[in-house]
Image (tube, rainbow, N blue to C red):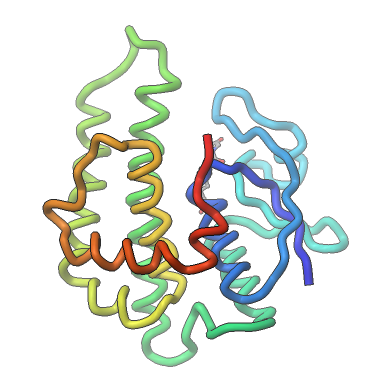
Amino acid sequence: MTIRIFFSPASPFVRKAMVAAHERGVGIEKLPSAAWPVKRDPDIVRHNSTGKVPCLLLDDDTPVFDSRVISAWIDAQGVTGAPLYPQDARRFTVLTIEALGDAILEAALLHRYENVLRPEDKRWDDWSRGQMEKVDSGLDDLEGRWFDDISASFHAGSIAAACTLGYLDFRFPDKDWRSAHPRLAEWFAEVSGRASMQATVPAA
Ligand SMILES: N[C@@H](CCC(=O)N[C@@H](CS)C(=O)NCC(=O)O)C(=O)O
């Protein structure tokens, strides 16, 4: 089974969907796209009015987005591997961890847009600081309260956490998140060896 996804090699949200597909044995056909908040890609907007990636297209061109919905859709196909979203009481733990990973990613992405996209004379340091505080408190939460659940198996919440850490390494190489989060650091080193993570390493 192969699905079509509007793709970007640098997007951590796309990576979540790609890792999910890899883990569940679903093939991906990458649709080229150029998602960018100030210059939207009409090919994406035609299917997903937010203009964001990832966006999956079903055979009849029905769109499925965002990364959480795509991951759940992929999981429902269940070609190979273990379910990414358990059906028992752990389901909402997994969904909450995924939401936390996504929220950290959103803050990191907003920080990047502020510092890469916005003209230099219009940048707002308090905004960047506020976003990075969200990243840091989110990482503390992953290291503390949620760690046992993240590391128990490789589920949709673990995928979100792993793609988040991978994005920090990719776009914020000077950020030393490992020193204050040694359990996450060890766990990330281990899961980075999975075929799904190896196959989806971000590229500029
Ligand atoms: N909540 C969405 C977020 C997707 C997202 O923000 N994608 C970024 C790329 S990493 C994007 O398309 N940005 C373009 C824009 O904001 O217009 C998801 O989980 O898929």
